[in-house]
Image (cartoon, rainbow, N blue to C red; front, side):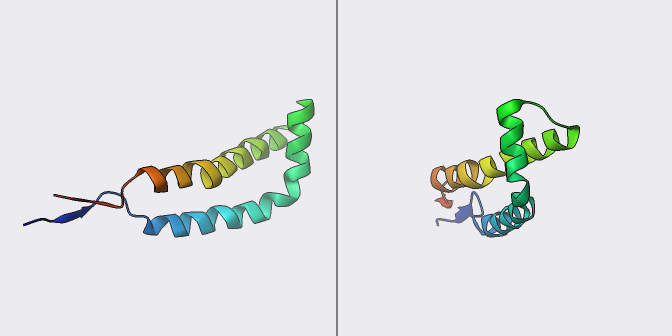
Length: 78
């Protein structure tokens, strides 16, 4: 008898995507601050934290999550 075992649950990607996109919505007004920090390297500690946070968030939403959804099989049999 074959049993389907879920290897990775794509269901949680919906909530993670909504969480990241809603967070990005609140931080989006700071995008000029982030671009300026990347271009000049000057800024406060807050600007550095926002820059790192937005970089990680954009990486997670647009690179890491689609990669996991494509490369991880939804389930395996056996």
